[in-house]
Length: 184
Image 1 (tube, one colour):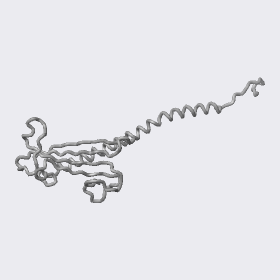
Image 2 (cartoon, one colour):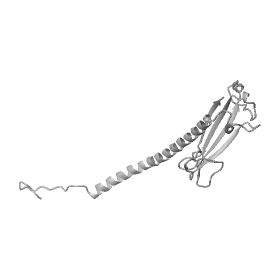
Image 3 (cartoon, rainbow, N blue to C red):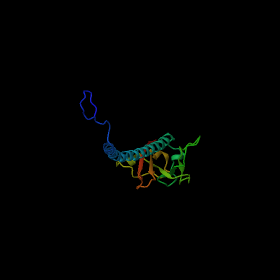
Image 4 (tube, rainbow, N blue to C red):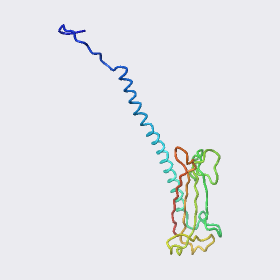
């Protein structure tokens, strides 16, 4: 016992005891365990948001390509007696943009075998006459080979589908559809 005035008083030890430190660590552990699911959910939502943004950009890019093409160009012409033209493309994990690539990394038809299939994109073109709007619905597409004077607008529909499993932790099976009418 130490005392300034000669009295003996107990001196308290400074610092934390081992028990206090363990209790503080246990409290921090419970807080951290509660935050981990939030981080996991954040990662999953960010990935899903990125996928949605990519799909939206790829769909809009295709629509803009078709809007720039002249109305009677063979790219958007229908085959004779066919009521629609359909083209299918795929985007795999191994597809990267090459110098001079005009198709933004999309491969016509099936996968390239260079990686896991991430997206498939289907572009459909149909043509209509102005009289098809009489009932307010587009339900009578004109076949290819119709005289150009009777074709007043073309419908371009782009359908993107995520090829991820629906049971995937990052989500999957998403479908995005974009549609525009190209007037004459």
